[in-house]
Image 1: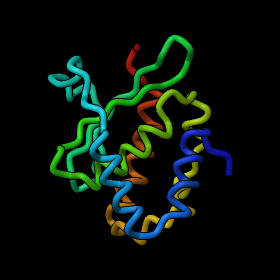
Image 2: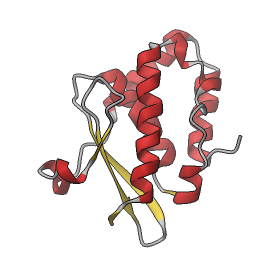
Image 3: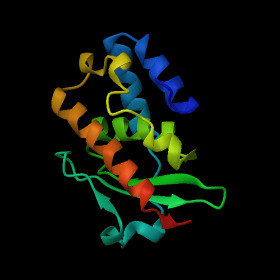
Image 4: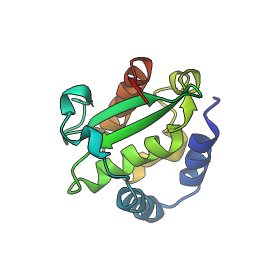
Length: 143
């Protein structure tokens, strides 16, 4: 399986962590989750929703002049696990090309053994976020 370099590094890091380290790292990702840019705060209708998540998740993709894609999310701060999981995808795929994003398999996270730290329901949402990121990348906003 070939993943974008940043995402592969994250997968490798998690694969060697204990359950406790995974939980701590997810919280760390949630705490560093970037805020939604002001230009999208009043425009949720332009953002893609992720109904697979129990938490409200909104995302948008912007195509950059160099043909890479940047993603922006709106996820409530009171949902640290969801924010942490989305932050993994954000950090791993931001700045990737459309081809790189579309080539990420839905089960890319299996070597991370995230089921040790989060529920299957959260993992289903994680896969849903990836699917919606792919869709948004195909139909991006102008950057």
